[in-house]
Length: 290
Image (spheres, rainbow, N blue to C red):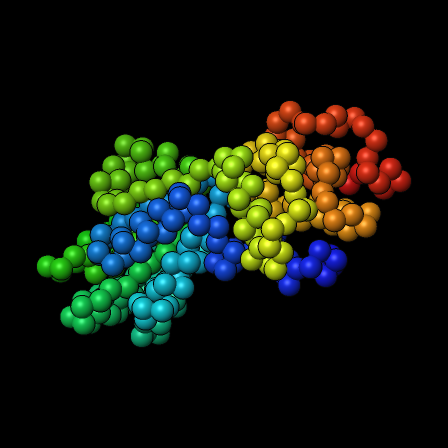
């Protein structure tokens, strides 16, 4: 809606996990390097954790792009609230395994044959599970047992578990110690610093076509970082809505008052404001959202 007004080719702050908009902060570079290294070196289990909105799914999308480019087959499970039977059905479907009933026994035989063929060809396959913190114990145990498939060169199936910090707590629990011992690489994403948030905003605007942006100055970027507590998804929400208000007011600069208005509407109040939330809103006649 406001793209042409600001000189953008596309929306810079979409919430979708688009690898093209990956801001390569040191921690995101390291996370992606861990994922790729773990797959190439056949490490078996890899764990990626982080708070909601820190970029885990974007990392997985980048990994999927890499696997596709290398022609490495992979299965991607994004709905983790499943039973063991549903898990094996999804595994068979995503890997394109032959079979008709997709019972556990049938899937395991077909998967083992596929992995052995890949192993003889000197390559591997990957199972990616997003929202892994929601996995039940019996499903996690089936996944752990899949990690036993190996040859002399290493694990035949690389398993990436991605989830919120609850996944770390689950893996540290005594009943999951066997799985924990199998995790060769483990990385956690954290919130941005104020400097990283400013660089993140600049990068996304530049990638969308607005180099040397003047929409968000340093103080406003710092305010957004504070309100968003450094969470990239919240940064996107605040920036997108703030630019919409600026467009409506025919302004090419986002002000602290606009950020206050957005945070009040979105019920984002993660820290003390730089300005008083009790001030008159930018759009006084607009009713607050419920």
